[in-house]
Image 1 (cartoon, helix red, strand yellow):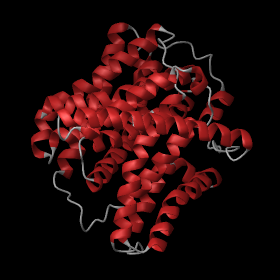
Image 2 (cartoon, helix red, strand yellow; image 1 turned 90 degrees about the vertical axis):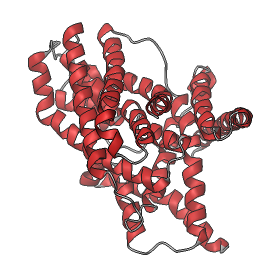
Image 3 (spheres, helix red, strand yellow; image 1 turned 90 degrees about the horizontal axis):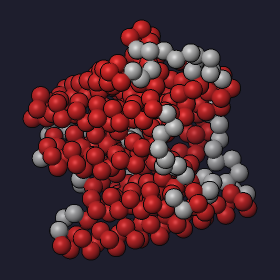
Length: 387
């Protein structure tokens, strides 16, 4: 093995996301696209223009990073979350009905689309995790179900395409339609500065290389490594009783331990945990996209997969709004819950700004926390039920 090439590849994969984040802050149109989508574009371009070296070094680095990033990211992203009962009736109802809506939409759509999709149960499980949690959940479930990295990249690309279409629909007419049909609370809570502060592209890693920042970062990383080690020991023990189940139990154990550790105040108060976890997701996104050589990808079932995604998102939104009508939940809370599940919490400030209603910021982010926490469990459950 050429260790020089190995080292250069490893450094490049770890440093390039920092450059993309810098561009997102400095260039307005790149910031609107977002770092994950930009990293997917960049990785896919690199994979298909022949600049990446051929040989075992590339495959070794790609496999090592793609396998390591998700187990490290999950606990880091969970440490800073506050798990508590919803503060309002509408928020609690929207949270529960949103989860139910996604699950019902997936189960209802699978008999129509699933038989035409290769590895249908695994695809349904991954999309369940994604549409209740986010990219990190989809990636985690793909590892648990032993889904090929190239197939994951393709499925995630389809999801980004359809979810972007859904987001445009919400901002263009969805909010207006929901407000005509559902109760509207007085919109005198709009705080432009609060929404802007929550959604603007700033540097979340500013200060991490100071003495204070490095102390918090190292503590986060050390606790994460302990969580990963404990989860691995637990999964090894169970996999001896149930062969072939190591990765499933490993990811579920990491998720559970991450939630439990978040209740420990000294860990919960540590800074940079969530942002460190997100950086690992950025590295993962670049790596898996750079594995997506179109000459080797299998596009079988693309039409049915995209149709399945549209069906899930349309039906889940419809069920969310119908539930809101029945339970008298206000329009903005219902819509923000649907956006949080389908597009993930980072899009909440954008939609709150479109609504001109900063009141929904915290409900949207809190609902997203629940989605992150349960996405892995639901993804595996749905895959098992549909297998």
